[in-house]
Image 1 (cartoon, rainbow, N blue to C red):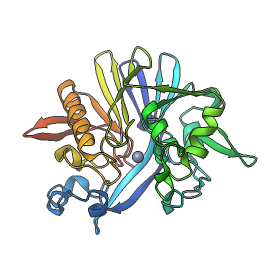
Image 2 (image 1 turned 90 degrees about the horizontal axis):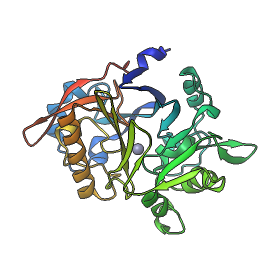
Image 3 (image 1 turned 180 degrees about the vertical axis):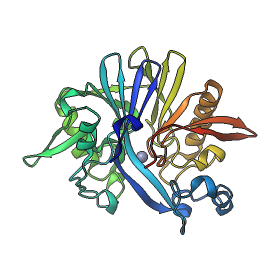
Image 4 (image 1 turned 135 degrees about the vertical axis):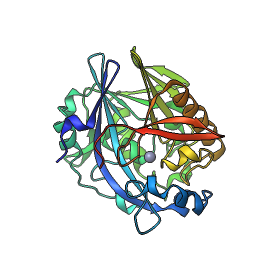
Length: 303
Ligand SMILES: [Zn+2]
């Protein structure tokens, strides 16, 4: 078992801990990133294999994880994974999971009632799952004392009443089982454009992947960090920032958000912590040519 301290970083006055839900192969590179040419994967194979790409196939590996932040005395979770017991007909790997996510959280010293704030960077099914859990046949908030911050644009977009195309997609059932129950208890706070969490942390809109996609910027002491949500899904997008995943609803807008925020991270020496990078999970980037390069990986234990 991994030791908690190897999963933890101090960034200014904020303690950051990686909480795993799962990691492993997800889908073939040419499906995941339809316009990213095969030679790009080959060119960076040494960096990508085995953490981010299969060693003897072309399947992209990802993690699904939460960034646990302790800031100004509060306990904050950034994204909540897929969740247990959820019916996800479109994604077999997410259907009716029974994973020890809450055990991983407990090993980091956090019980569900300790969580003050949940940040859903966007409302895809793999970022809202542990918002709720199944108790006596009903979906109830996993974190009874938390406020759940959600982007208003996504809350409206993913509401099945507004978007009849959800049936059959990756978000089928997700609004009903992971958003509506926390909305019903009055725990949801919707925000637009930007939202200051505290003196260290601020939410900023980063649309494209979904209409309400967002990032959390950390600015504490001399440290800067970007909790990047789904701004990127593979470190190859650092070198190829113009390429979006097949899950990005507006690829051109996603590209523009990616370039803007990677530029900010490069210019300010910010640590970038995406939701889905396996291996060391977080990295620093630098400007290079018309794109970016990986400067260094975070000292977090590899999966
Ligand atoms: Zn995601």
